Length: 414
Length: 162
Image (cartoon, rainbow over all chains, first blue to last red; front, side, top):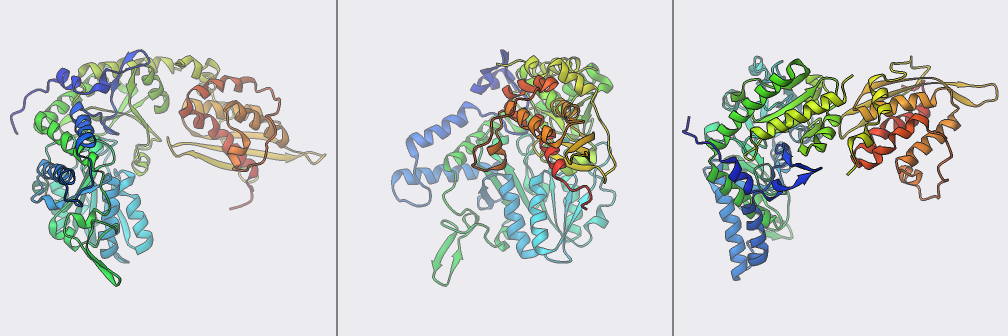
């Protein structure tokens, strides 16, 4: 384990202009970073600077600003590659978000490789983004979708993994559950999948913003994550894949940039990563993502993880002490095996009502099914309130949450 | 900024804690419809026992509400069930239109038709008036109207189908 040092949350908070906002006469307590994080000044300024000084289309012109724009974009790609331990910058495909990355893989790889008699293995804790693209393709191609179930304490039930893997072409699963916070044993599942001859796709949406990531160490084949959950802007995400896997996949969207040549009788695809990047990309957003990576690099991802483990432990302890059995916290109880997002169920209240009361106290949480309806059914609930922690949160935010939950409990008491 | 007391009036909390007409009716013969709010996962099931009087008018002789959801959707369903029980379908249509008008939803927006709709009928909404504050919380309007949309589906449904 790397040596870590504590994050200076007060100085981090000063980097996020939005955090000085007041909501309903209370200080803003932002506990919804799992849905979308806030952005530091450096990200906002990088995007602003791009538009004010270097705005031009990329990979097109020979003039100074076009070259600058291209350099800025490609330097962000290098930062992203290094951030997740990708062996080659060419393996970083910019997408709109994780949803687009998963759809790209389902359509391109799935369209080429799946048919009747084949199977894709997912888990009960997937976000709809890693379910519906497979449903759509299964309807077209006639393959089976199989499911790894969850255990009572919110882990994947891997007891039957070898049987589930038999005949599977691809395993696609989340690194961290967006509802339970569970961090899945990526390497273990990947090794078993590879032994069974299956490819592995991992959804890193809730993982990359919070833990040091090394795609080579994880052993996986395909990986996706999104910028706006890691201090970057919305509209920019990333698909990483091993070169040989991406090379073998047919293009997804057709258009400019993704071709080497176009003739009346056909086209030749461009090399990686351009093959999968048709059309003008969101350049300012890519620049913003690069700045977000710089910010997180500067904090140190080992420190980010240590901060969140310690804050999650404080939250679990505080909520347990103050609410006991009247508050259910879904997912693993050990902070070391989970991320800093807590799905809460306050007895006698509905999550929508709880979030309404919390909003009156300036506290932002997400209420609902979190785009994970198969998981909600497995848990036997319709909705939860989800509080999620990040680098700018500290114990005072957890205390504010507990106070407001107390108020909600009193308000709706029978 | 509207406060919580604008939204959660005491009578709403009372209906939430002690929902009226909670349960099921055998279907058929009862009409049955399920309504979902895809945003939050709330679901409501409306059962209507519809009987025909001697003069041919149809009336709801019994009603039951199933499902689960937030205080606003549950209270609205409970109040709706009390308001429609024993009423003719024509009276129920008037109440529904008056309620939706209170929720700032007009008929032409609902069915997409361009025709001029009649002004909301003069109907006493009683307890339902307590839901007026929901309009100040736009995200919650769908919670309040879920039971009413499901009611309309139940009225239109064929109890003997499927």
